[in-house]
Image 1: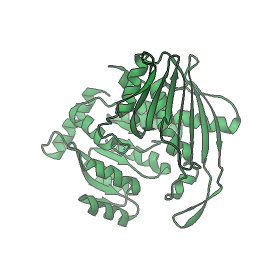
Image 2 (image 1 turned 135 degrees about the vertical axis):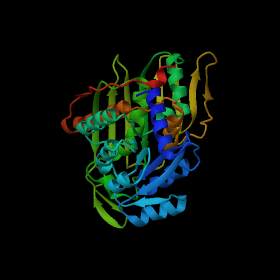
Image 3 (image 1 turned 45 degrees about the vertical axis):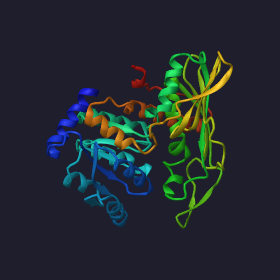
Image 4 (image 1 turned 120 degrees about the horizontal axis):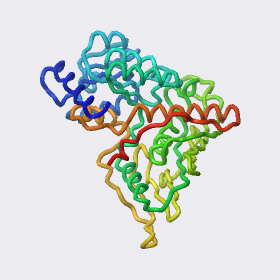
Amino acid sequence: MGRRAAHGARRQGTAQAGGDSSTIRIAIAGCGSVSRHYLSDLKTSEHAQVVALCDVVEERARERAEQFGIPRIFTDVDEMLSQCEFDMLINLTSMQQHYPVNLKALQAGKHVLCEKPFATTLEEGRTLIETAKQRGVYLWGAPTVVTSPAFQCMAKLLAQKAVGDVYVARAWYGHGGPGWGPWFYQKGGGCLFDLGVYNITTLTGLLGPARSVTALMGTAIKERFVEGQHVQVEADDNTIVLMDHGNSVFSCVMTGFVYGPYHEERTIELVGTKGSINMLGWDWHPKGVEVWDAEVGAWKVVCEDQKGYNWNQGGSYLARCLATGEKPLMTAEHAFHVLEVMLAAQKSAETGQRIEVQSRFHAPWQEE
């Protein structure tokens, strides 16, 4: 679906909302710590109106509702879908619950933005994309990194061959591990799905789809203490992924829940035949782009103004797209490709083999 579908979604939302053509009604599933960041951003949007919250823990939903002035709360997604009128669901539940909640919302004719990953198997991902097409609605998966000014700047510099031909890149993002949500460490969780997904989205967005993957994955810390309980770790907490983008273009992503403090300078590096393009800060919170100026023979920093971009603005960004007809830079096909890359990394780590990646995606940011 393109610009036309976005306008169609706006008209439908307007008729149900009673007249304000610029407002997209939003419901949120999952009221944990991430919801606070999303709600803070949505509160500032002229195109978004949060009408309901849902969480299996009623007190958690009630607390968020009182904090942000949300009129309705639910403890069951099915009840919210059947009893509340809205246009888009933002899914902030645990990774293991992403697919079933997404599927229910799509089947009910709602647009869906899901925190990463939007599914945990390729079959689930295909089902979600097909359901969205059948119901005539949008499906998006976080992260939103392709919408940042820094990403767009790097993509433009690559297209201009500002540093020659780029054949190699590396990226890394890690920390000591979440202190909340035992599910981060259980099957279906892990550092790759939680953190590595950012860099994989960025590098496939800049260098093109991965054709094959080789990876190392391990569980370095076998037990964690989370929310007052000991958790036996079942998922990866230390991972390195190598991607082959074709035409001898290779990239490396390092991620983990075993990282102490480290410099946030140059967390993504694209090395070309005449210089390099580096992201300053993280791709989820960029601070600028550093590029080698071959004519001067020195580094220069560009794109320091990120125009307020942050990782939690997916809801307001997509509400704006739906309300105005702006074509979203995020696509379900890119999110599916990233999921396939991560699953291929798991299989490679298990088997010691290079794993082929079949999916491809169109990059809207290359159309200009």
